Amino acid sequence: MLDALALLACLACTPAAPAAAPANAIAVDVELVLAVDISQSMDEREFALQRAGYVAALRHPDFINAVRAGTFGRIAIAYFEWAGTIRDDAVIAWQVVDSKESANAFADKIAARPFRSFRGTSISGAVAFGAELFNGTAFTGKRRVIDVSGDGPNNTGLPVTTARDAALAKGIVINGLPILISPSPTFSHLDRYYAECVTGGPGSFVLPIYAASEFATATRRKLILEVSGIEYPKVDPRTIRIDAPIDCLQGERDRRFFSDPYFPELDR
Image 1 (cartoon, rainbow, N blue to C red):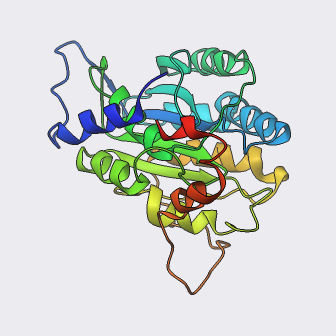
Image 2: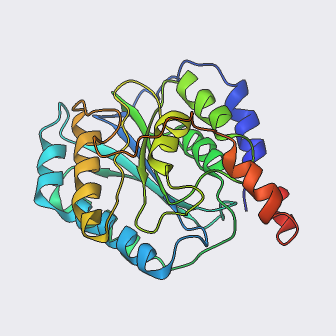
């Protein structure tokens, strides 16, 4: 498993400007990292819906048409699954998508992955890991985007805002797909949490999922927006509104009271 603290330390010490691309780098419209939550707060139904949503979106003609409509007509895409830590085998490596065949091939790799879940929710570790994936790629993209999906707040590793700010300093955009199908009664405002604590960068947005029936459409819309670079409202109009400010450390505080006595390994 990979150490999120070490990743974030490395990320924070690197310069804001992206590393120079190799001379033979492939020009793409966007370098897109899909960061997918597999923590144990996700039930089997949510796992299946999340997986099916990404697979269907990548195979959909509207997504493929959006890719082909770009300046270069191709994107680079990578995928990984995260929880409290990130396993060494959690990554689907970078691939160029420029056609129905290449999109289907990437979707097939996601569909073939086993269903697994692990303890903890380290959004900060996911963001730091995602940012590291851009280092040394064979691509030069007009934009670099991390797409984070999940159903709970950060409760493991460093504060999520620390990882977010380090990624933004490198010119990376972070978008969010918070899943509120079965929201926690103590944390029902995950949509606003993602908007204020997780996402950021030019054109960033949050596209919440409130019902199982929305999964496929929302995931497809999100990928099309990310590929095309079309501006979208920062937060979906249906986002829950509350008067109190969002506490970006609430997940960490809750963990201290509810998780640590039972799962001390999550503090590593």
